[in-house]
Image (cartoon, rainbow, N blue to C red):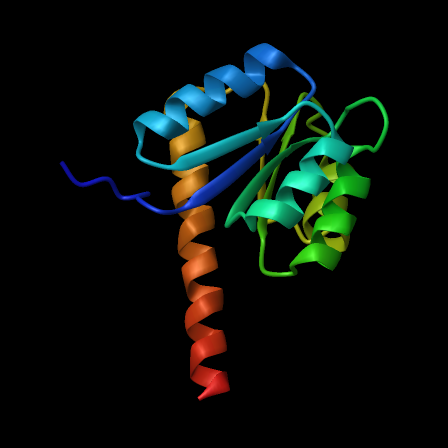
Length: 139
């Protein structure tokens, strides 16, 4: 059986265990290699260690906020595609997330497995596009 996500690494940073577990189950079933972290500091350490293609970041966490985590992920690897997971649906926040913190997209809690898979596929397409542009300009 062939999985579209084979070899793609996804890191989920969320302080809610049930959210981490459910996202992990959905994405593992789709064939992705998934790692989780319970807070921003642990997530940043894991990001440095594993070099994920995509990071799903909860916006509201104790300690380092999701916005801080995204900024620090940009320092670790600007090519990591970031998806914000949030219960907040503010238009101003959406603009800040996408423009200032360079997230590709966001998911509003609660979301379905189908929504999660769709956003992850979009993020992987973007990651592949970045890599192709890098290869083209680097040649």
